Each structure stands twice: as C-alpha cells, then as structure tokens.
Length: 141
Ligand code: HEC
Image (cartoon, rainbow, N blue to C red; front, side):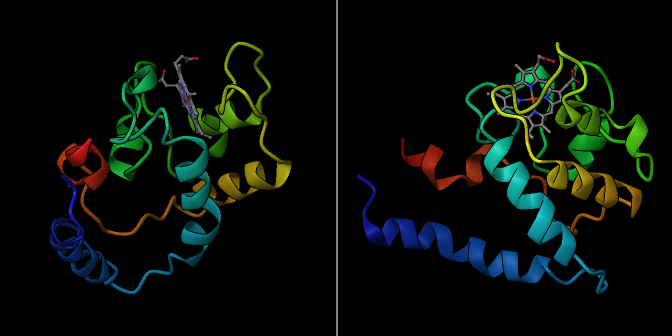
C-alpha cells in the first residue's frame, strides 16, 4: 500500500519546504534546535502534538503559537517569564499532582535549558503549524 515511490512523492515537497522555512531573518535557532526541540519531540509529542492520538490537556507543544495559546488551563508559556510559564512548572516536578512527562523526571540541565530559552524570548523558527494531513505515518496507517 505504501510504495517507496508514493512515500517519496509525499516526503519530497516537505523536505524542500522545510529547507525554505529555515530562512526567517537570520535569528539564531541553534539553542532551540539542539536543546529544546529534541526534548519536546521525544518527551512530549506523544501526548501533545499533531501526532498524538488524543491531545492531552488540550495542549499542543509542536508550535510556539499553540504553546502560547495553551491548553485547558491557559497559556503554557509567558515569553521572558519562566516563573509564570506552565510548561516550566510541569517539567520542574515541584507539584506532585502536575508533573511532565508524567512517568519520568527530566534532568535539572533540561529544566535550566527551558528556563533559559523562555528568558531569551522563546525563539521558534518561522514555520507553519504542523497538521495531521502532513504526517505520512498517519496518512498510510
Ligand atoms: C504520556 C502522556 C504525556 C506526556 C508524554 C506529556 N504529557 Fe503533558 N499532559 C498529559 C496529560 C494527561 C495532561 C492533562 C492532565 C494534567 O494536567 O495532569 C497534560 C497536561 C500538560 C500541561 C497542562 C495543560 C493545560 O493547559 O492544562 C502542560 C503544560 C504539559 N502537559 C506539559 C508537558 C510537557 C512540557 C511535556 C514534555 C516534557 C509533557 N507534557 C509530556 C500527558 C502527557
């Protein structure tokens, strides 16, 4: 059903697009791309992204606009204010009834990285909000 050619035809335009999205005025995304996005993708997207079978807490974390909009409780991030950002409260693991990711406390280094990223303006590349239709996995399963 999912032949290599159809997969290629689907993925190729995405790859081309992604390389174009990178150009948004030359802001430095290296901290975000190396310290923040990989953590979100591996630790949060299972439950908080277009990929999640059911989005938890009404919150998606796969685009800054959605993070700022927030979930059931309100905005998940306040730019330049880590102490007011729900996302940091969640990964800080201080509240016994609100800890993210639910099963595994992340290292203090990761918490510090998020704090720094939020303090510095929560820079996120200028890219479109991911949609369900763009995910080849979901299209073919
Ligand atoms: C296994 C699923 C799962 C994973 C993985 C997960 N979460 Fe959650 N998350 C939930 C559930 C369920 C809720 C809603 C219930 C609650 O608030 O405890 C939630 C709620 C939240 C909320 C509050 C949303 C609101 O507005 O009420 C935040 C913020 C949050 N998660 C952040 C994160 C972050 C950051 C990560 C990754 C580091 C993460 N979550 C990983 C399941 C998950």
